[in-house]
Image (spheres, rainbow over the protein chains, first blue to last red):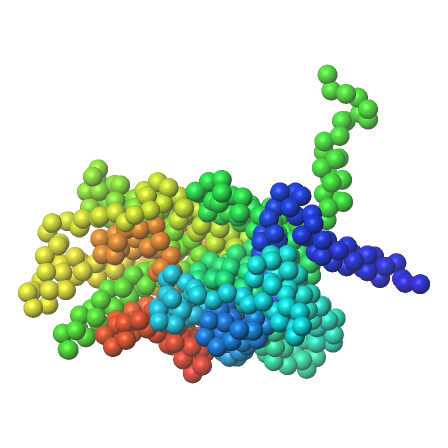
Length: 335
Length: 289
């Protein structure tokens, strides 16, 4: 017999995975297209990776697009130049983004708060300018073209993830599951608990003898590896990579997905990514001024819903709204 | 060759002057309120565009003064209605708020004035080169440097000698104490915000005549301004000024030898500074960590 909270947990996890597994079934029914679902998954992974740092270590990185983009460019370049194996290219992309994150992380791990944010933003821009200017390698402003994800070869069978969007969705889902599983496992481990301790009270953690810088550096590096994986998957999804993926506006969008979903929640960023991707898709088809609408959503969210969708106390909110709206004398109908 | 280097160093100093104005405003706001103002570039662009619209009515000189004042006024409104609510909260939220504002600013500028660059003519008497040999030193550029120098000098004198300026500097170190000494911190922060935005607006008017007038003109100056602050040392206004000029010149010199690295070089400088002198060139120990 399981304890009730464990049963609830298992039920929740089961529901999430079932929903994700069935996306190719239900998404077209409600009027979406499958590539949109894949994009949610990819950006959701990016947001969850950032939240590993932001929500669970309490460190504000505003430059994660750099590692996202490096993963994308690494994967794309590997496919274009030396390999026909999609997984190998993905591994190379992840290594590129992750190692860059590890190196830069060592430079910035002593900064805190706004300063950490500022340094991460500024460093992120280096890679943007490299991708923008190194025309011969990266295609510059036009982006990196000329590569395609390759069918997966398992000896006798092969899976054509290039032409079958459903297969590609499941390909992405496998990596998403591996990454989410790994992050969940890490957060439950003593290491993850230490990160929470640092988030809650850095000074106390330091007095307990925890090497803070080392832990933050590790958390930053891990987060960069996973975000690079998301970037690589994004390159495979579009068969394309462009410099705006590395720009700080992309970083801001990933941060907003995290906050939109709920910064203290493990699955929140995935929900945030879903809301963001759908809104962006919808607004940009509706009005040329979608940037303003997006900006207004940022502003309203920060001012009125800073805890995000999953961070809100919904039953309490519903009750307080009900208390305000219900008629003063029970049952009386207004004339 | 020397001419080429001189030419690019001059260019670097000019662009550095914009970084200085922009970064000083950002620094003022960051130091007193702990807010990184992502919308700073949006305010700058708005200053330039407002000047463009105002010139036919009030002339260049009028626009040079009125446009930054209008932008600063808008800054106060935004500070009072939105940013103020986020003081003392996790910096994440003010970052996101100003990030959203930057989106709105850029899009609205594009909506009102159009996406393509607009011509902004500098006054007739300022458009001549000073000498035929150094054709790149135009009167407008000299004028610009003079205005920036006057603004920066005025700012430092103001912070050093005026009562409000002293309070702003004191608040940078310990706002609680300043507050308990009876200073209205809310007004102080609003004023300080307006001051920072005024500098951005001024930079916008000057930039309209020098760089091109485009909706993204401020956003492209934003990141180098961050770098200027970090290189110079967070918390130090003279450091910010030094940082702005240094990275401007460094980018200018790099243009001579390796043009495609001219944007990336300032980030390499930042990495070096963080590696060798983490507090920045003139920064105070401990403020950054």
